[in-house]
Amino acid sequence: MQTLAEPGSLVIAESTRRQVGALFEIEDLGPQPLAGFAEPQRGWRVIGESGVVSRFEALRSEATPLVGREEELDLLLRRWEQAKGGEGRVVLISGEPGIGKSRLTAALSQTIENEPHTRLRYFCSPYHQDSPLYPFIVQFERTAGFARDDTAEAKLSKLRELVAPGARGDDEIEFLAELMSLPSLADDFHLSPQRKREKLLEALLHRLEALARSRPVLMVFEDAHWIDPTSRELLDLTIDRISRLPVLFVVTFRPDFQHAWSGQPHLTMLALNRLGRRDGAALVERLVGNVGLARGLSTRSSSAQMGCHCLSKN
Image 1 (tube, rainbow, N blue to C red):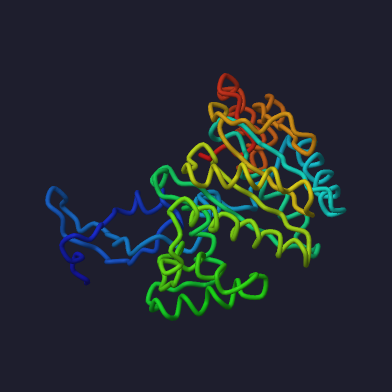
Image 2 (image 1 turned 135 degrees about the vertical axis):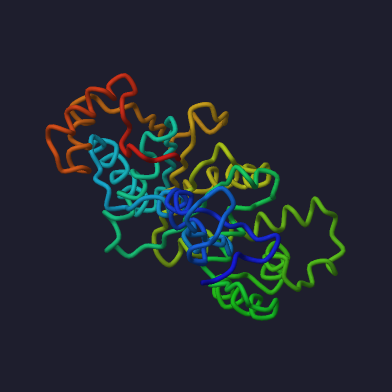
């Protein structure tokens, strides 16, 4: 039997392990003697965040049925067709927690997965609202394939391999390297902090333009209600520029998120309403495989008006 992890490590119980799903990499410590328990209890040591990029993927399966959102999916597909033709489109999806925003974007990705395109996915975190450009840093780390034990030089090599084909020069790569806290010459450019910020944001915008030149891009930005101020500035610039690119940009957020993105001709607002009783019953039936139980659960849940994904917490 393994002993409990070293001091400072986070050890969780089986019940917590089931709740966190695949959000974290964990090590099974086996049964452990714990004070207050007659029998040894199984423990798990948390190693770090997993490679799963979204809470939706980590906590649930994309195989969960999409029910009652056919019209919303059709709208997204129409916007995708327009974007592929070079008329960039932005769709802002708002909805309460648990109503199915992530499930809808997953359905869009699944529907077009066999079409030639580039998919970019960004996820905000409630724990990183003060971390500048956190969603973009994480996206670079995952796309470049950074490993936990990579040296700084190895990460820089992977980053260069990823961005060099579309970069306008070494300066652009240097700014992106500095963003990733990697060895960079950007500090030697003798630019003011504001000018360096502008150059970095322009480098990120140019990367999107470079990707869009080779194939259409589906860009999904989830949980914008947790966005950091610098990423918010970049989103403002991105939404303005997308109208000239073959890009569909989908942004999800909760209804209380304040933004100034409405009123532009290439932008569509999509507010998700709660499912009706019939769709709620159909969803539960497909999840539990029991018509009687599904009807009973749907009736008891009618006051809550279940969302598209009854367990989602996006």
